[in-house]
Amino acid sequence: MTAQTQPAARNRKLLIGLAVVAVVAVAGLFAAGMVLSAQPGKRPAPGSPAPDFTMPLYEGYRAGFPETIRLSDLRGNVVVLNFWASWCVECVKETDALEAVWREYKDRGVVVLGVDHLDTEPAARNYLEGFGVTFPNGIDVQQQVSRAYRITGVPETFFIDRQGVVRRTVIQALSRAELAAEIEVLLAE
Amino acid sequence: MSRAAVAQAPDPLLDDRVHDLAKQMNCPTCAGRNLADCPTDTCAQWKDEIRAQIEAGKSERDVLNYFQDRFGPTVMQEPPREGALLLVWIAPVAGAIALVSAGVWAARRASARKRLSPMPPAIVSEDPYVAALEEQVRQS
Image 1: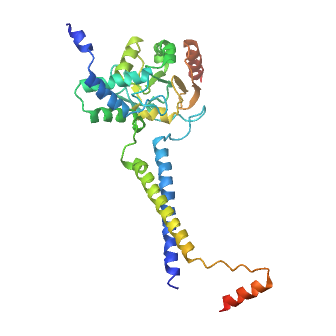
Image 2 (image 1 turned 180 degrees about the vertical axis):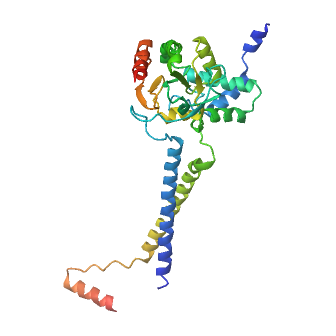
């Protein structure tokens, strides 16, 4: 190798090294973006298993359940999983209906479970107290439940059958009649 | 003055602290919007919570940790400098250094090539006399 080709080869290696660093940097940014917006899996479609989760329940809104509820522990019950927030205007329209079906069906193997999304505790408590809610309601810590279910907003309701399978998803406020109709279908199975 | 009136009196220092903390956070419902500048009900509630925690004697770090623990790292304007998210801070700097270095290297190489490039070929005149004369000069 001549004296001239040695620096050229070194330069080429340097350039490749720099290119690798640049590619790794871009890949790193991409990976970090993925971590920040990570949403495990796909949105559970009707017919697919409901993603399991644990969620701490608000004190005073446990309805006899433990401090932390696990969805899979409710297997054998029909679960009406409702995502809500105190600042959500549409949620106001269905909270009475959710409470009504909870009172009507809780002794027939139905659990209405509220997931409080992006809410502060005082505001959430005011809301629950204002509506006289008694069904269990929990805190969506670090948005883990809403990420697992990939909700697009609130209110959003997932109907889960006794086998733990998502049967229907509704992205709007539900009336008492609509809730009862869906619950009756799942109870009849 | 009643106790209620005292409690509701404006406190510019407290307002500033709330604003400073809110500036470091995102609106939870409007993508890319700063909590401090967002007029939605959700953000009003979050700012009330910040205020309540400061009034309860919590430090600014405690308040930020509370929101991060409860709602996740996406509530912060700046991603945390730990774990996999450290890449967000390192990657742009490393990428910029690599690109600048590559640019400098390419510029130096081009400059070196220019210096070492051979003389352009002589223009051959169409006039046979001039052409013969130039050839003679080249060979001399």
